[in-house]
Amino acid sequence: MPERNLELEMDELKKDLQEIKNLLKAIQKDMFKKAERFMQSRIVKVKNLDEMEKAVNDKCFALASWCGGRDCENLIKERMQATGRNMPFDGKLVTKTCACCGKPAVTPMYFARAY
Ligand SMILES: [Zn+2]
Image (cartoon, rainbow, N blue to C red; front, side, top):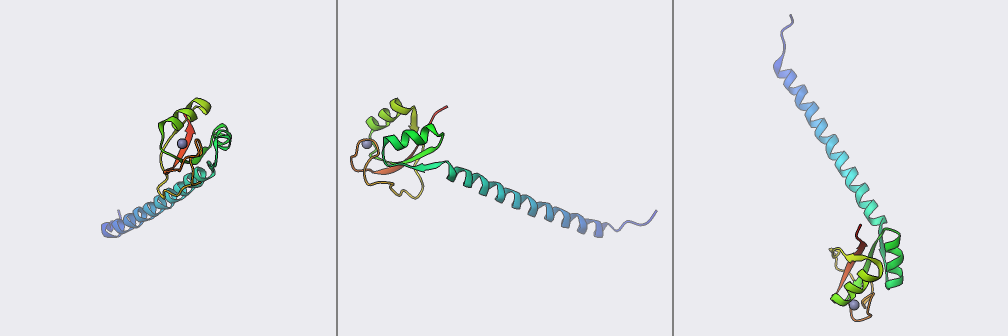
C-alpha cells in the first residue's frame, strides 16, 4: 500500500472546499440578481386609481404616492382588494399628490392584491 501524503490530501481538500464556496457565492449572487430583476419587472409606477387597478389586475405591485390617510387605504382595498405593503427605501414620490385623493402625498407605497 502506498504511503498516503495526508498533508497533500488536506491541501487538495481545502482547494476543493474553496472552489465550492466560490461556486455557491456565484450561484447566490445570480439568484439574487434574477429575483431582483423579477421584482423590478413586477413593479409599475402609477399616478391614479385607474392605473393602480390595472397594475393590480396584472398581478403587479403598484408603486403610488400616498397621503398616509386610512380613508384612501380603505377605498383602495374596497375597489381593488389591494393593500399597502411597504414603503420603498429611497422614499422618492411617484407624484406629488396622493394617487387616491389628490391631497399632498407624504410617502410612496407599494400596493398589491392579497391572495
Ligand atoms: Zn389620499
